[in-house]
Image 1 (cartoon, rainbow, N blue to C red):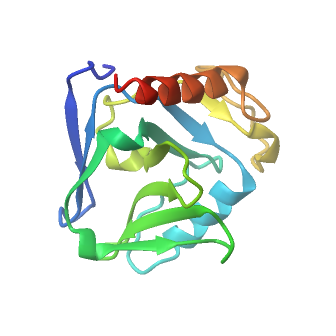
Image 2 (image 1 turned 45 degrees about the horizontal axis):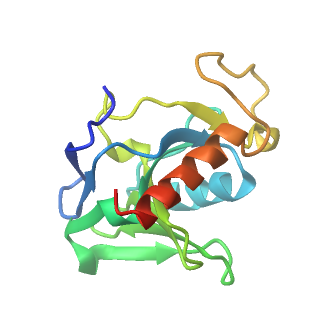
Image 3 (image 1 turned 90 degrees about the horizontal axis):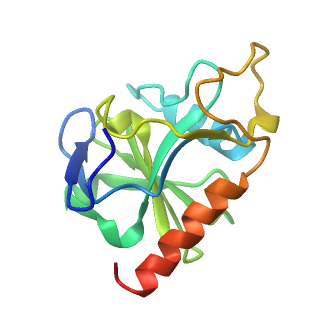
Length: 171
């Protein structure tokens, strides 16, 4: 069930020591197959006792929220940033207590955070699209349950722009 404009959802790491609160409906729920997401997910899964966050076909599922709608509830000292390259603007935030991937934030001022779908209850944010499928390495056919795009589809970009405009008007 999609979040209502007033809904709050608290997600936590596997052991419960780190928690984030997301308020209102997400911008988008997507599975990304870009090379960076594939590499970052593999590197996080290689941490001691970490759970896999990558789907069997190589995609990583995210739920994107406006930055102003995500709050750290507890465990700030337990979050560690991983970058796949030192110059990357992308911070893959992991709860060090149990090596749970929590979210991706960005150094370059992007107005959203991408929370790992693995932290959410199954019915919290249904996947709406698959993106960057041209980098997908699996050979089996993509499921046809949601739209797929070889790059960033127009619908995805429009959702991000609409969220930015809404932030400007504090709605």
